[in-house]
Each structure stands twice: as C-alpha cells, then as structure tokens.
Length: 146
Image (cartoon, rainbow, N blue to C red; front, top):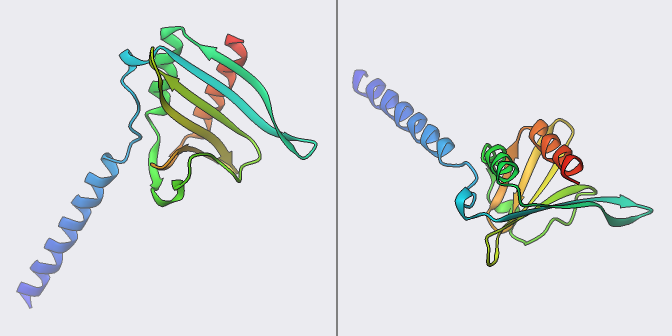
C-alpha cells in the first residue's frame, strides 16, 4: 500500500513539473529586437458588410518597436492546432502586425479580442492568449504615431 502511494505521489510530482516546464516554454517566439527595422500596424473592421482597413501606420522608431515586441512577448500558447492557415478568417475586427528586418518580412501576427480576452494569432504556429489591455495599448500607439 505504501509503495502504491509513493508511486502515485511521484506521478503527480512529475506531471506537475512537466506542466510547469511546458507553460514556461509556451511564450510566443518573436524576432530579436536588434534585427527589427520596421513594424507595420493595420486595423481592420467590418463596415457595411465588408472588411476594410481603418488605420495603417509604419513604425520605425526603435523605442516604439521595443515596446511593441516587449508587450507581445507576454503572449502564451493556448492552441497550436488553431493556426493551420496563414490569415484570420473569422474575426470581424483585428489588428495585423507585420515585423520586418532591413531585407524581408520576419513575422506576421493578428491580434484580436473576444469578450474579456485578447489573442495573438501566429500563422501556422498557434493561437496565443494575451492581456486585452496590451492589444489596446498597441492599438492606441497607432493613433499617437499616426
């Protein structure tokens, strides 16, 4: 009986440790800040039944780039299988984030909110949860820069 209890406790400890390790490693992987030269932000919404671009801004200021990448790095993986395509299809409004180096597009993300949660959709990599206020902060940056 004691052996069985020890085995059960060991299994619980190992499973808990594995979950903690997986949770730590599930943050979104973003490009190195030093390599990023430009971030484009574009907000889309449905107007008169059509998806339209509402606002677009290109950000080249390194402090703004650092801020955006820093807050986005807080996103944590929720669902790896929900991102088996390259662009969002179902959200009525979202913010697209295009991250460029000097030479090419490095990353394409789509940010959106539902009820009280924020999400980051990374094409072919997964769906990440993020604080809704972070998306609001990035959205507000668009109008300050623009």
